[in-house]
Image 1 (spheres, chains in turn red, green):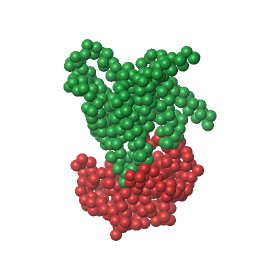
Image 2 (tube, helix red, strand yellow):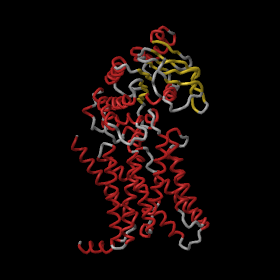
Image 3 (cartoon, each protein chain N blue to C red):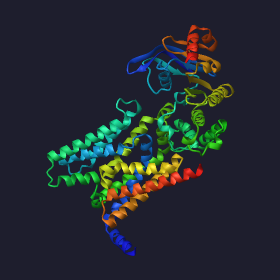
Image 4 (cartoon, rainbow over the protein chains, first blue to last red):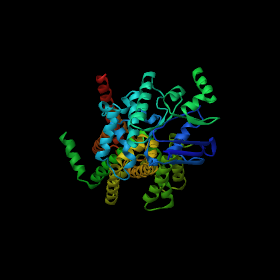
Length: 235
Length: 284
């Protein structure tokens, strides 16, 4: 049973179709990279998987004991967040919010979970610092810790390294790879960075005019990766 | 100085002054609590927009000859608030434009209607007091004070109960929704509470100055504090102190209540800003 199954998925806005006929499965422990040109529907796919917008056709099913609200999500940063007065601890804790229901305050376990996640991502020393004073890489780690509070199984990362400098980018990729390998967390990542995608991912989903889904090795053997990889280098 | 205090003590013996102070402080508290969320969600001007809607609704109520205009005004304002806040990021007309449109539109229609149908001999006086709330806070009845107290308690209770949800939804609506928080529901709740506060606050400072009660405490607190909790708490304290001070000055000096409170807010904001700059400078 797959964690996530997308069948005959069509995506788009207000009846305008961007992608059609999308079929793929994500199994526990996979590291799936979603690549494709700008406007090919990567972010729309992400939103559909998260249940933020309905698909135009087809189905998204979660399985293997994964509930719809157990997907950890690392969104792209919004303008609002950049000058938001909140401490690191407050933000990480808010990752537990989804399972609170109507309970008004966080439980002891949730506070401990947030503490553990901050520890794991090296944020303990920053716990009381203000989010807007952190560097880009630190902010991404805070949002990642928040996502980890929401899930133990599946992380969805939307361009996790955009705006980061090369050194921090490598650290971020290493961190994600570590979570996937050591903690057994399934990762779905949207990326422009095709080089990193083929280096770290176990599976690749390429969307655009032609759709490809398969393992990394199959992707490297296909014609699609050739043109896309070369195109990437020319940029 | 003692003369001033005597004068103040004299005024405080009047029930209408005490009512004004109770209501003023409560409204200042309520509006500052949600002000932080509104400023951060880039809805600073919603107070302005909604109060103009309330002004328009009052004009309609006046023309229809309703004796108790509160229910109609509240209903129309709540509906507008829900529509404005619901549109969010995917709207065709973006938040600020939508608020501006509704704000100006309601103000114009309200004034037009009053002008065409009003039977009052002092039209500009009526409009002025609705816009600036000049004296109506000093003419509150005991019932109105009780209604205001009850609603304030409800607002504060809702805020405390849903504090963490309001934080999640304000910081990152998509994440909150994706992880199972009913973001739409909480947005609706915020919208309704805002509308209620604004209708209440019209008595205090009038339509034009409500934005000040919403944004000054939040902005001042954001100069000085770094966590959501401390910003919220400071904004509430800031707002209550400024409202109290403004009311006392207005009573003693005989200045218009609304504008005096806002003037105190401006001064206090400037102080916070300077303190923030100095503190920031020292740390570097």
